[in-house]
Each structure stands twice: as structure tokens, then as C-alpha cells.
Image (cartoon, rainbow, N blue to C red; front, top):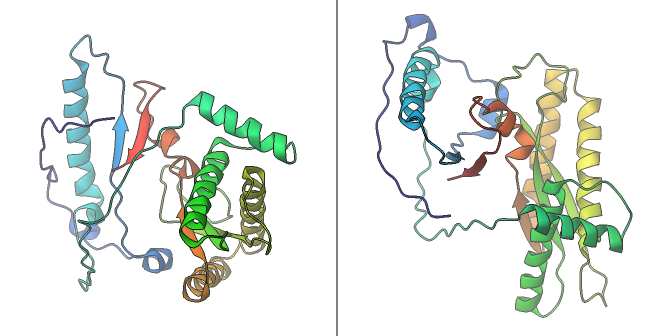
Length: 268
């Protein structure tokens, strides 16, 4: 998909932010995660017959302008101002599209080789990408290498904490799936990786439920998971792959503006 930028516009707050809203206390979860800004494209079918596109653009601009007045962190900055600079000139991003037919074939392949279990679209696509990455590593090193796949999971709706239903992101944790090949193993099967992902996600949610009623215990559990992931990065002799999904964070449901159902969403 080729994207052309037709126009750009800087949106400013419609009114000065009230003094009572000019400072926003970051939660422990915010401080734990650090600043992470991910641009997302919302793509809608181009079937504008009544000049509705321009009206919708104006509506979105006005809505954002009013929101910036009320939600100051969107237009403000953290204090003290600690920033990490990065040059991403050498980072290559690509989009691979898995249509419905391709996903159905992958699910059938996984079920044929292993247990006949319920497999989500997200799980099968993640496992398929993971499998390709293990093959690339095998081609480079001449053998299958041990590896770890981390997957970002949504905490909203999974705890007893009073959280807004009309938001996503920020409150998340990770599952950790480990693949360790045997000495004579020469290939990895798709259904094996699906099972590893399924088991790791199940364990992560099970561990979350044990501390879901207490904010302090939940925070401590998140720190333990982050330390575990950090230890994997420091001590792993193989490869580490990090996965996430917008679908996991119910972004499609929250970004339904009542215009169309069939929309496409992707990170920038």
C-alpha cells in the first residue's frame, strides 16, 4: 500500500488550558513504561460521494483541538525534561499483508500438525513470523538456535482496578515463550510455536489474576516480568523476538467512529 501525504496541519488547543488541568501526575505504570509514542494510520475506504471526507477531516481537527485543552499531557512535556535521542535512519519497516485466505491456510496447517485447538488470527500470524525468523537465523548460523518470543498483552479488563474502558495502551505486560531445539533438530513446526505462544500467554494471564486485586502487587509483578525479559536479553545465547498487536489492545473497537466497519489500522 502506497501512502501519499496530501496535506499537513498543526493542531493547537482551542482554548488556554485551565490551571487545574495544567499538571498531570504520572502513575507508577506510566513511569515504569517510559515515553512511547506510536503513530497509527486509520485507513477508510475511499467511497466519498457527498464530499464527506472534508467534513470528517474538519470534525477530527476540531475534536483534537478541544481535546488538547482538556488533556494537557498530549500537548505538554514531562518535568524534569529527560529525553533519549535516537537516529532511526537505518531502520527499515515493511508491511506484510496476511489476507483471510492466507490466515485460514496457516491455521489449517497448524491444526493438521498438532492439537486441534482454537487458534486466533493474531496467534497464527505471530507464530508464522516467528517461524520465518528462526529459519533465517538457522541459515545464518547453520543450525537451529534457541530463541525467545515476547508478546505484549493488554491489562485493561483483566484486573479489578477501576480503569477507563475508553482507552488503550500504557497498561500492559509481557508473556515470554522459549524455544529450545534438541541437538539433532533441523526444523521447527508451526504448531509447536503456536503451542509455545498459547502456553506462555495463558501463564502470563494466570499470574496476573493472582495479583489483579491489588495495585502494589500488580506493579511489583510487572517489575518482575520486566526484569525477567531484561535477564533474557543479557544472558540469552540465541535470539530474542519482540511481538505486539494493535488488535490485542482493542484499538479497532475504540476507534470506531461510526463511519464504516471495514477499516484498516497500522502503525506508522
